[in-house]
Length: 127
Ligand code: 5GP
Ligand code: ZN
Image (cartoon, rainbow, N blue to C red; front, side, top):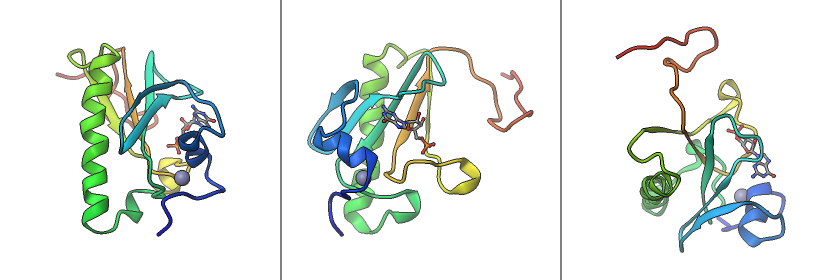
């Protein structure tokens, strides 16, 4: 599989063809601010390699990439000041989830108290 898709928005952010507010980069992943934030902190963590969604993770290399996204989430959350207050890492996958960009990305969201469960009309405070 090619590492990059010329028609993919997030591959263009990886290459620098489309600008983004990048907050973290290493040899495996990139993190940048969501253009339409849903929370005080809303960052997207993506692999440099084009993988369309969770459904397209294949083999050991992609398993490692999935772990690299999570390892980066921990670092990015800490740098964003939400490592201790708490955050969610959300991977929308497929139509019901409203996934709109088909380059796998973790939404790292936090900075305010959230509700649970995360369904329309079902939000409750608990704990
Ligand atoms: P999805 O709906 O696929 O789970 O999430 C895609 C996210 O990408 C959305 O939250 C959307 O606001 C964000 N997004 C879409 N286009 C751009 C862009 O050009 N730049 C940035 N930084 N975020 C984008
Ligand atoms: Zn891509």
